[in-house]
Length: 294
Image (tube, rainbow, N blue to C red; front, side):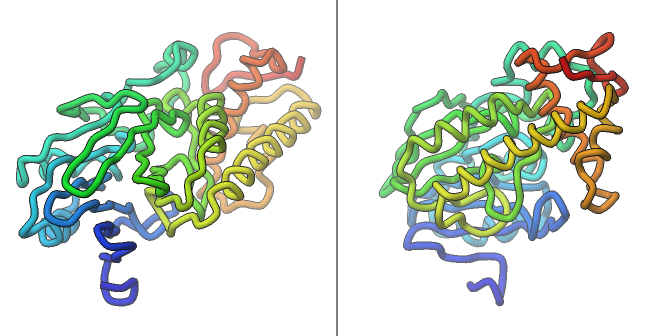
């Protein structure tokens, strides 16, 4: 099927994208699920718990064996359908860990104090854990897991030859939401720099179209975060303020409905500056905390 006639697109022989019908400002046209293989299949990101999407996936799997369900990260728009798909096919679920796995102690310290938790699949429980560098293989395919925290602590990318399934870490249509404590800007930057050391030809993200120039996109994303850091330093130079006030100082050209997500991203930048000793916080770090430049 083509873009014009349905949600299923053959990217290459043995590689299909199945897009869920969950469009939103945070998901673009919907979550991308990917089927790898011909008769023996792996599926990356079953997507949201929607009957329609499950029916489409089962129709695409029909006549073949689904050997593995791979999860890039446990946000509900990526992992919620996994239990039903596993029950329907018998395929085990593989992931880095549950929704708390992979977080740095620095982020764990803010548990409950910062809000956050947007879209987290709190009940997610994989059948098998994948460590960084682990390889899964089936008939005609071999996939390597790369631990790439930042958008979420348990985020994995999956490498299939020179194609990388980049989840929500790197997308072409938007920058990734980094919302503490699940999101971690320090980890996000490190993961992007790690990907810069690779020679991947193509990224297939969790939302939106393929990224055809990964090196350029990574450079753009890192530069964007550095620019946001500079803007935040400028906003702090105007005087101490809480995250809400600083967000309005920095984000002057976005729609009002996107300001809450922007504030979560800005809070991630504030925590990174706090770690680096460039910012202080009056009292405990929390939604109403006042930050000051050193």
